Image (tube, rainbow, N blue to C red; front, side):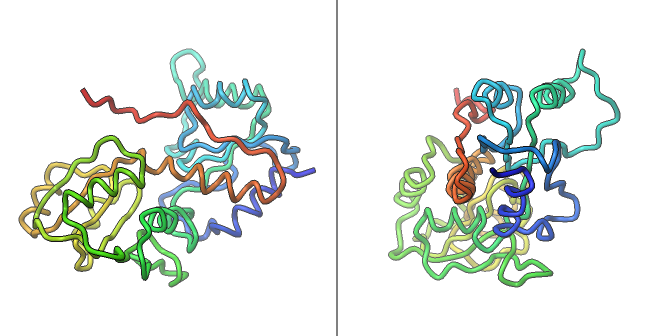
Length: 258
């Protein structure tokens, strides 16, 4: 028998909660450490659809990347507040929630390392070292085995990350060899970015894009939802505990390309 605490301890070996950014909220965010775990659902976000999926599949633990509770809750209003209803349904169905966010981003074998390996980058290094562990940190930087033209790299990227679309900010149309990446929302890091041929991240805003062009830096916005690839990493890792783990199949990007 495995408990919620057993799963947490196992996950913490992969991505210690001490690696989380100060503003983040990670760990056991809802539930009981002593509850038995028979089935785990891994997801990017704990949404209404994901909770309904968990209930239908008789899941008793959800492990998410993005925190279930991020901003402080001042009340639980089941009439008009969707977050309150999500929490109510989780409690009613005795489903615990563990969220590992920026600690999993920074971990040595965490999400950004996983993304770098999906791209088959070589000589992978930490992009921005963590202050308590120099082997960990946000983002990764590495090299392709052979340089690619910008257009060919975009095709390669879309294939490896299973992306239909990307938004490219082209500051310099050079061949791509050195690649930096930071999953999620990392556009503001362009100002402290080391010299690379292209930077992959999400949530790139208009003014950052303009600045990138002025600085002759290439950015490809791979979208925040690319972090959903974390489900494969979590599934493989939690399965080591010999518990049943399933990936959410109801999640999709909130953006519709028209």
